Amino acid sequence: MDKKTGVLLLNMGGPEKQADVRPFLYNLFSDRQIIRLGPALLQKPLAALIALRRAPKSRANYQKLGGGSPITAITVRQAAALEKVLAADGHFLVRPVMRYWYPFAKTVLRELAAAGVSELIALPLYPHYCRATSGSSFADLRNQNRQLGLHLPLREIRSWPIEPDYIASLAARIQEGLALFGNGSETVQVVYSAHSLPKQFIDEGDPYVDELCLTIAALEQQTGKTGKLCFQSRSGPVVWLQPSTEDMLIQLAAEGCKNILMVPIAFVSDHIETLYEIDMLYKELAQKLGMRLESTRGLNDEPQFISGLRNLVLKAGGLVSACSC
Image (spheres, one colour):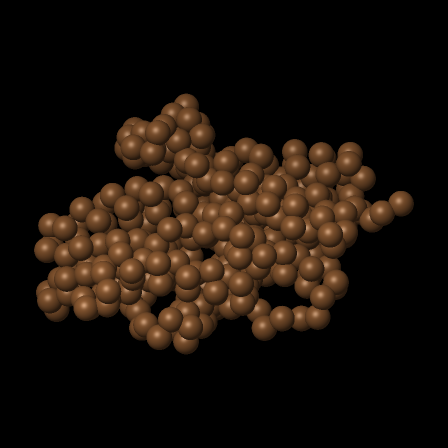
């Protein structure tokens, strides 16, 4: 009998309809690995209060995207594409697993166990390790594997900031984006926007920023284009990574910049941070500041990107020699 391997594509998830927004926010703010809301005993009550207060604004933002987040549908497509390209390499069942919305790890693990998988490979759709993203998903996956009594062998792909096909596909998106500004006669500033983190995470040794810089260095080598790093999507009364994306835009305008290509460096799937924050809010801010802002398209299920995910799975399974990632 062929060995069956379950591949778990780990992502944050998102509300698919308006009624999902408040419970999604509650799940998100209940996770102390993302943000600590006072003593542990108060985490969930405070999460419920924050979700209640933020839900109306978040619903309005998701309404601009058609009512909900596309991230689950995109991750389903990524899983299907990855399973297809892995078919020649063995018997792999690839499934999305979301941290804060459906499908949750418990449900997917039960499904894969019923299908007869004998081992698991956890592949986070976060190229850069952070305890609040990959770390939280790994911890939840381990807990559910144990609590369900499955005890399936689990291999974790910690991060992949310089996986060759990932870099090549992102570099191609950058060249495509630069072409939007014409034949090269115009000066274009590349801006890498990553999801922000509390600065405390980095102070405590989280490698997130270091791994972002590895990706940027690899991209600059391929594209010959230097860029500036900034951080978006901060919330809450803590010290966040600097500069913020808004501050970066204001600074560039003051320096006389006229054209910006924004690269959502930490996001491989389109969702509210790319489709709303970058394509709507930041584009509007840039326009008010007298600049033109374009953004690179999401990698989503682009074939070369999926090829990179295949390389990661095969490397984790010991089926190919180690690559430079």
